[in-house]
Image 1: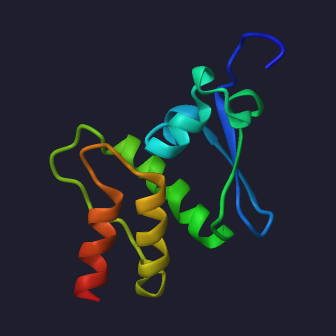
Image 2: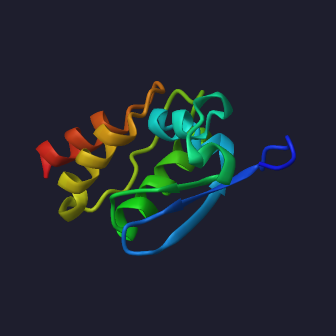
Length: 118
């Protein structure tokens, strides 16, 4: 960025052109996004605050929902299940692997569990 101030929000862009503006702290839950946005990475995303993805809008919308879900329940003991439609499980599993969630509540583990029980 021209000035050294980092925006509180970032934009995730799906491969079908949908844009999702989310808080940076939510986006940083995903390891891949956190690395893209790291100012020391020299990635274009770090200066623009826009992360283009290879996933469609439905998957990115669910990713954003999970990122906020993770922040909300980060330190909770009894975490309610997140609603994941069975028809999205395989796509979400691929996205989870790509985005590399690294917190205690693992996105890919949650999707695997739902996929295997569906």
